[in-house]
Image (cartoon, rainbow, N blue to C red; front, top):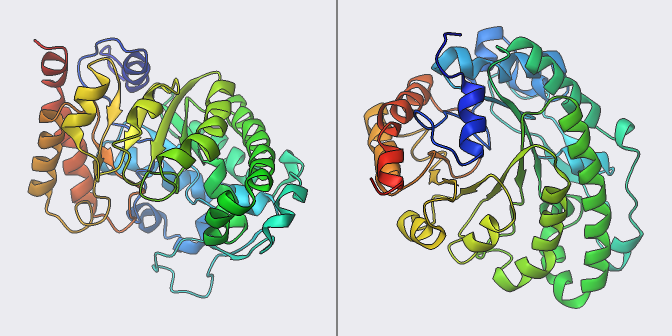
Length: 354
């Protein structure tokens, strides 16, 4: 690294709300694309249980398209599996087939049983040790001045993977106390999980309570069945933290920012300009570019235009609105990274009203 500000210094300074030379090129969701597997010749399905392979491919964005952060794990099933839900990894698919693991066996179909579900022993639970090991190895494989983050999904969606999601939504009406008991159990487990990630060296934690937006759970139920548990997890974290919710959240951005996260990451469905107007210049807002229609299908020139538009709308750091699809071309990711550096230099002047 040169004597200029490092990626880690840039990100941390940004999280602290202080002015930096330009926005950091980082993601609170993911930046991994399938080209990382191609580099090492790894079948896609092989990276979800092997921490050596996972850390190899998660380090490739820094080399392949000049990204300035790394993030793990790769898939979203970690907590559900830890509680005993069985996942499919599709080892019989072609090696280049992009197919994430999915939960195939739920814990229960009866809401009356939610309150009796117990948390497992953290250090022996499912693939939790694999994630922690991946994080440690990832930090060893990237430059020490590159920030390495970790993410976990929100308690409500983690529950929605362990049981039938549509039944869970209905249970918030018919069995609210059972749902809250389950939420308490999952939240307590995730707090311990997040602490282990921080102890393993995570430079920031991204909490992703998907399935909790106003177009899924709704604002009223968000306040009752999501926000208190999200708050407990965020309050427990000692380091930097980002809150991301997929889906429409225009009516919830105030609640998201009041959570104490150092930044909030929003879906491409949101009204960028109104979000900035509502939260003011001090909020760190990461607004979404479509992770498939734009990042996979669009041209590099179109991506550059989209990044520029995000900055013109007052966004701090452009990000994908949900998980980046691994089929995104390397040239599109390079355009994304380059455009943040190119147009981001003007951000602070405009954002601060200069």
